[in-house]
Length: 288
Image (cartoon, rainbow, N blue to C red; front, top):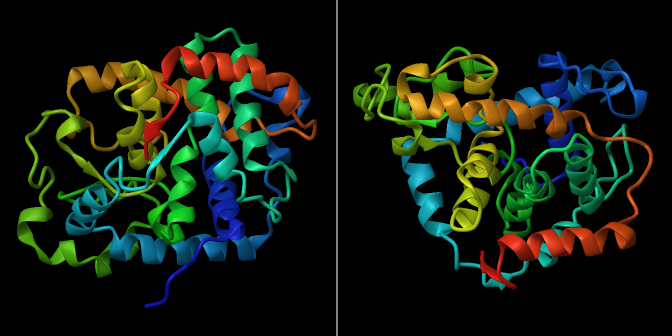
């Protein structure tokens, strides 16, 4: 099998696919209709299918445990939050049909959309940092282990996951202990017991979990868990606390998908506000 290495076309096609799968939203920034976003042709969807073929074949329970150990915070030195944003900004997206924005500009647009709607400071900050886990690409991780919809491993794969047919080649499907509805987990035992497929969500959660309120951590950890927060799958793994907290994940989702606009944010003007906000929640540097 071949790898998909980091390139913006794959990530953009994935995000385009999300917006085609989940177009329902009342959030239309700057009067831009939601159907004007992500104007891709059909070959982009072929790219998404190939991405998910590899992702679904390789995201196993063993791999997720291995990645969690390999990328435990502290393995890649220390950085401040704004410094990490600048580091991620070396991934300039030159193939996005909606915008020529850099990574920092995208993060600021997300945060500014949340700020404009009067949400709490921690919510605004979450929008600012939500994609910082994609620094995994700069550590050499392949695209299939950084982006994409996430899902539990260690139990049966739901047919609500995008392209579920590709799980047929996943080695975990040959292990009877991992193919029951709950697998290795207790029914209604809570998502904190569950291993979620590896990517930027889980990595950033591990990096920032000591610094943010729980609502923010749910947004970060589960914002790509579309099978749960949009398709209502895996309720039997959740407890009542998870169900209550997922309202925040759902509240975050429209800002993640629909805040891009053609007007670039003024980074120099916004930086003092956001650096002040960062300082309220984070020390000067944290372990990555």
